[in-house]
Length: 375
Image 1: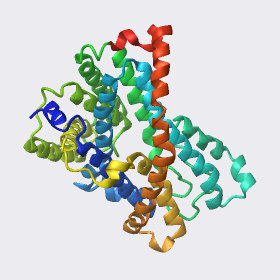
Image 2: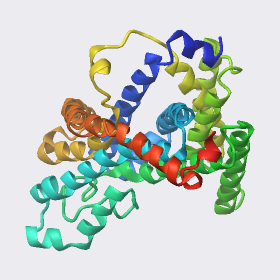
Image 3: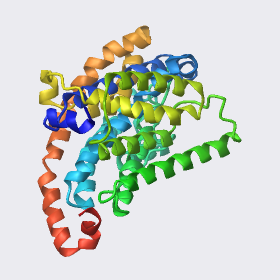
Image 4: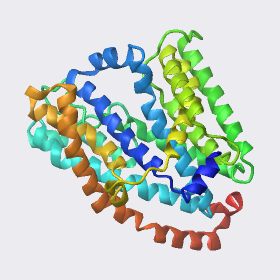
């Protein structure tokens, strides 16, 4: 059966994608618990330097991005214009992100900082941190002044946000490929994939002096973007790509080995793990109640890091990765549920306004709206 066959059999909504999003968000939480419990140096040594731990851990974020690429491609093909496509991406990502950043900085930060409140709010780090709400994330902007003193990762409030800019790059890049005719001719997507792969390998070669054997660290942002484009391409060729259990299993083995071998290996593993991700997502098991009522994956991703930091700060006697995971997971799930009910679901109801604005834009500014590029 092809990807399209599985999608048709599940009426376009296989439950496997919902399960995958939830599972991957929980895995990210568990992986970060090691960093929060023992610090960055131990985290890198234990997680990233032992086969197959490094290969397994490195598959999680690429799977997230490949999954996102596949599902976002569905949204792109359903939208009339780039206007509505970008609008839908905005209301899905930004409201919850902005609320999480502001709550972390304005509500929680003052309660766990070692600084006096006037000093805390006047600090440059505080102002820089608030820029995260705009999607402008850097290594420095993930820190809040004086928070979580005594934790191995002191000051680090939202370490997971480093992927946000790459997610934005994915949407912008897909929009550019669409303007170049990707919806009319899917070969444009393949050319974009090959061009970005070449650029990534050349950039890594220049960085390493063309010595690819040594392992160079965790998965790169460029590899995440590549995984996203792979997911888009899998959707574009869904009626010709076969999915079989043996292929999925082989792809998983290839991905773990490739990610573990070298810095260049991640670019081999990306293709394999993208296929595995879509193959697993096409499974259509009955949906549990939680999947019918809410999508907790984004909320878990947004809030898990700072909640784990809080657990390590308040309960130093339980500063082991498994305790942090066990205590943080139900708290994070509860906060994610509140985020869904109070922020994310209401924001998604703005879709009708996006489509209304799209109708006006198509009539008033067809070139700006991208009508010609998408039809």
